[in-house]
Length: 210
Image (cartoon, rainbow, N blue to C red; front, side, top):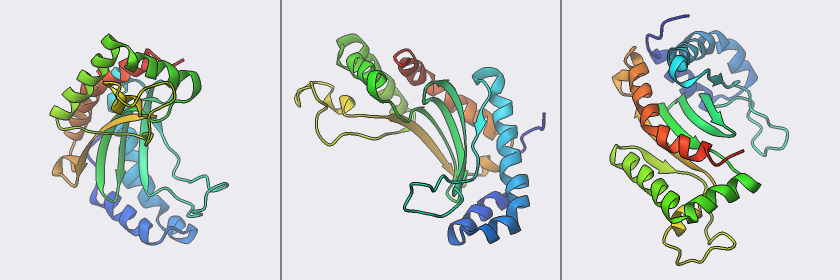
């Protein structure tokens, strides 16, 4: 296993340039930079975390443009995801804006979303989720996700946890940007601590999805 030593500046430069020239010709001319400066360190980073959290999926760099209006062929970030359940788990990415750690659930539909909302509606488990998110915010994490503009069907607008009930996905993240830690081995411990802090959220959701 290759030891993680940090993401080089070349990784940030690669994505800066890719955002300006998202073409096959640019990619083919700089693919080795992506391999050495992006993919290899991302793999090393997630390998270093695998014993505690599990193996990560390091995503392919190619976009699926079959049904997209945007036909640019390459993703302008490199992400990796450790699944704890369907669409639930931990995440880390690098892009032109630096490194970001994350966790939560990025989508839920049908029965899974219904179970999540039932648990939010329940006094005990709903308050538990509220406390988890409040704790993460106090620790400096950003809370986000897709939300309905109106109340979900079957729930009143004056529900005490209506803001949580509107979520279709809930994610938390910490942006490291260009902090010097992203260029060092210490990023492993930083992401590890973030993922440990997110574990109560990941476990709360995992217990409610099939």
